Every structure is written in C-alpha cells, then in structure tokens.
Image (cartoon, rainbow, N blue to C red; front, side):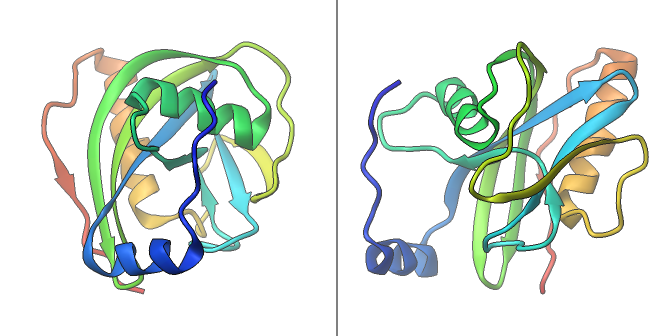
Length: 158
C-alpha cells in the first residue's frame, strides 16, 4: 500500500469549512449480523459505525476501502458489491461516501479509533443516523440482488 501524506490539522480544518470530504464506508455481514465499531475519536465519538475513512489524493476508491479496513481492524477484505453513494451534510462536516459490501478474510482486531467491535443482529440506537439507512439499503440489496441505483441525501443536524 502507498504511503499517503496527511494534511496538517489547520489545513484539514480549513478544507472542511468549505468543501465536502470524499470517503468510503465498508459494510461487512456475517450471516444475519452487521459489523459495527464504536468510535473513540471525533467525528461521532461514542457512536457505532462502519469501518471507513477518507479517500487520499491519487488513491482509487476500492483501494481506499481496503486500506481503511486494514488500518482500522487489521483486516483483509474482499469487496463483493458497490452499494452506492451517500451524502451526510452535518454542521460540523460534510461527507460524500462510497459504500461497499465486503467479506472478511482473517481475524478482526481493534484500532486506534475503535472503542469496541461487534456484530449486531439489531442495530443499536446510538448508530450514526445515515449508517442506519445504509444498513437498510444493504439488507434490501442482499435480499433482491438489485443494485440500489439512486443517490441518497440525508440531512441530519447535530
């Protein structure tokens, strides 16, 4: 994997005031359960969410998905399906995320921004709101095998 430069915090914070972040999220199912991790850091500290993160400059979206899961969980994955693009503009940040459904190849481990990792049959109340919608879409997709072909916009303000 390539070594990507991180923006200095001041530049990162300034960018976020004016532009959305391009991100990836990875949905991992095990039978009838979905993998969620509890965040230790902002944004969404203390909330359950998918493994995911920012896409780096000159990085392909699929490579970003694999990189963030490897970094967060030390987990190798196989990307099975592209679910769709979701938008989450909140007052502190605006993400445009590319969602994939993946399968795991090895044992799961915690990372620096995950407080806890768990497979859930029932989605916890403190899951990031737009991730609840993505789970619903992913389950629908898995049942029907039809591509979700629309773009979702979720306007959730903290």
